Amino acid sequence: MKPLKPLYGFCGLLSGVFMVLICVLVVTQIIARLFGTMVPSSDELAGYAMASSGFLGLPYALHRGAHIRVSLLFKALSERGQHLLEIASTLVGLVIVAYLAWFTALFVHESYVFGEVSSGLLPIPMWMPQVPMALGTAVLVVAMLDRLVSLLTDRSFEVADAQPALSE
Image (cartoon, rainbow, N blue to C red; front, side, top):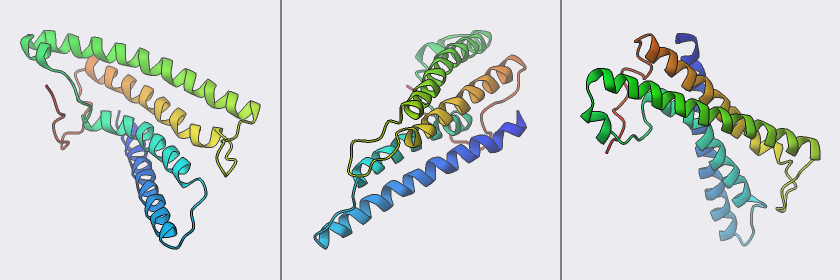
């Protein structure tokens, strides 16, 4: 659906912001070490940024057709068979991602309710770095549902100008 495309783009943008944050943290830590000091919990923060970047990048990558697929069986099928396999694989993916999103949201909620904090030098409330995981999986559910509807209505889901996904 057209109104959802900006949401996928925004997730991709946030993913990129977290990648830049990783770079800034690593460079800052290197510079700090040159001056004989350190940035507290920079490794921990970079890890949180990496997880955030990965999870928020999932819906964007799906929309761009950038997920890697194994197409050996796919190429051996007729056009109708390929279409049915796309629908079936999207349904399976939707179920798996919905399960992941549900339990990720529960995980974040439990961390918030129990007041969990990180074990590093900076006591960071754990729900804060976990929210991007929950957000990324929730938007991926929406994207998978959008893809399924697109397949069932013979519309294109992937962006037309996207590079072809790697396949084997």
